[in-house]
Image 1: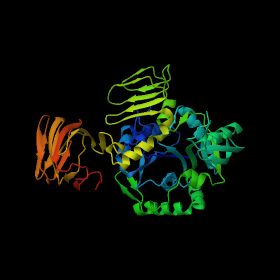
Image 2: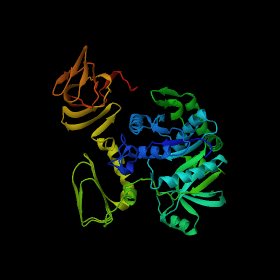
Image 3: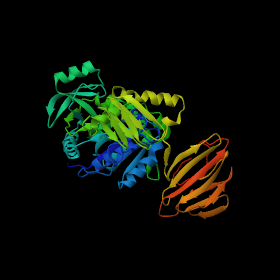
Image 4: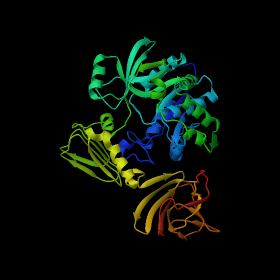
Length: 471
């Protein structure tokens, strides 16, 4: 590998088919689904193993920026860059933003484009395949990795290979998510792979092909990049210019139109973990074919995925089932309908149910809070503030708050006063009073907050100062 490789990790999206674990404010790429690390952390760790690799560049939505930053910090991913999308516009514009950033550092940059939610079983073999793909990309190829199908799956796109090209093959045809009969026909004909969606190309080559086939996207992204600004550790493209960009995927915008598409067979154990059924397929099964996570008891149950997050879950007499429990929701489904979970999420969103949006625990850049109890005019939360962090200086117009320190040390701004509170001490914040909560200590600060008032929504916040650039 002669040139430095720029790993680019696409960490947008909401993973609705993995509800109730994946929520709008905490989607699957930020969850530890198959190990102690989150999917984003596992992807970054693989990319860091590349020889001669640059620090990763992560493309993420604005609303998930602090989640991504904290997870990168926690794993020691020094030098990582975060590119913020004001809104999702598909993978084609996201990849273009990343390419323009890479070209700033090196006009000959080779980009390794990865999704943040893929499972790779054999990391060493993956790196070997990347090395092959980089060589083909240096010769002008736009390289995708093709996975050997183990059946006529309908949830993946297919790549039909053409003539050999070095250690890969030219792409003869892309087939987007065929039905079962067409998928079986493709597999029977041979020379076909599942399209993994992971790509390697020269950044300049991708931008040239995008300008050729989708000049509207290329122009909009260049305008957004030219209007970029930096904020803390984040790079923000011009908001209005990016929002005006058409939506499209890399596959539709470039790969299915270019004459330079190449496929490298990848035999490294890949899954996109797009549904509970794929998590069952990827998981370690017992002698009855079950994958069980957490505190579970299964009796006369076969070929099922059962996950308990906060309490004991027992399953009796079910086959080919999915049972997933969180502190505020439970999903029970047949595995054959696992792809349809997103329909439930859409219904919850239409009904404005909070369960589609977030868990009981909600992460913020300073730490997190979780609901303990709630009624018509009151709400109780447990708030944890990380060492050295602080909430914004703010005011509420319709609620008062009573804070009790459970552990740690709190510095409290209340109007013109500044108080220091320790364990078992408390304070009251009247309606309309400016206030701030800080943790000046070296250990997490934990408080219990009791809110009271005629409206307790999170949008009843007037911010005056904020260390995280929030409005």
